Image 1 (cartoon, rainbow, N blue to C red):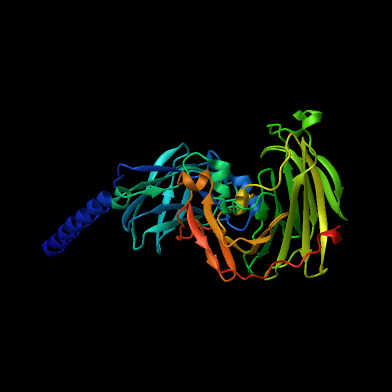
Image 2: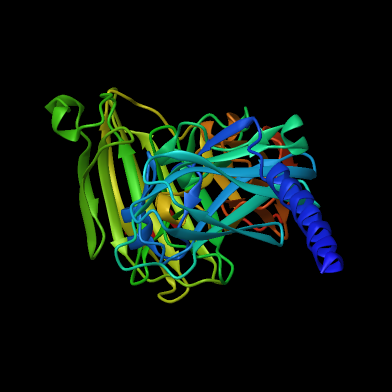
Length: 432
């Protein structure tokens, strides 16, 4: 009997030590970073659920049926201590949180917002980290709201990047550009020619592969939905407003003509002006050609025309011609870009190749662009997102963004492609 009592005493002692150790391991740390979950999370490959659940305030009224993926970036490996600021309507929610190949399960019992410590995770690599949050056996009436992802630990002694307060553009992801300096000898740059190839699997919904940008607009192709793609050409009004209804009559963009099956109208929100697009289910791994014309139309107007060439039709098609008031110029500030305009797909990477750029000058003839400057937007420059890249590829350049990959190209890097000497064979007189 004494022997049994002795064994029980030893067991209790060991249990006490073990429980104390667990309590110490779970002791809530002093968090270094409070990452807003709304700006940095997605319900991947489900735009409808993403729009419904992911809000600026955080993950809102989540039923737990679809996992949440959240992201942050570190510049060093090591230990990270993770927490969540959250609440559960049921007060009886079991979460599974995974990071860097490790998973921790916790019981959420609080019905009001509370910081809940998840535990320690070891990051073997620096760069972007994906935190997956799942509900184990979600209840039918489950409603979970999460404000913040909380970070502590040695990795926070280095630089940690995430979207701090930029819900729309932060979730859209960084936009990247290729800028083509016009040679000084070109005094009348009239046509800008470019080609785009989107590799298979890189045609993500929300992508705008813009081929021919200029000082007053842009021209390229988009993925608008699973069943719709567009060739888009827009020209900005000189009147600065986000509402096209506010543009005075003498500063409106005038549509001169348009191609078959082309919609024309006005646009707003990113400046305002005239817009045209043609619905066209363009294909991946296919070269599409873009030709932009810009020239003075008297002392106070500029005419811009956009032409699109498809191997399917084997001819140049007119998208539209617009007349812009309060300007009288040839082409200027030529560039290409890649952007995502659907925030719900900002966690998916996309890429395009931009090839064979040429400029036609009325006096000099064809001039080959063999140099470009890589730039990016404010989302990239402010380090809200660092998943952007660009550079040389066979016959031209590439742009890549979104998806939380770890490659980052330094902004304002110069790239040069090999000259081909094969100028476009275009009879301008025969253009529609």
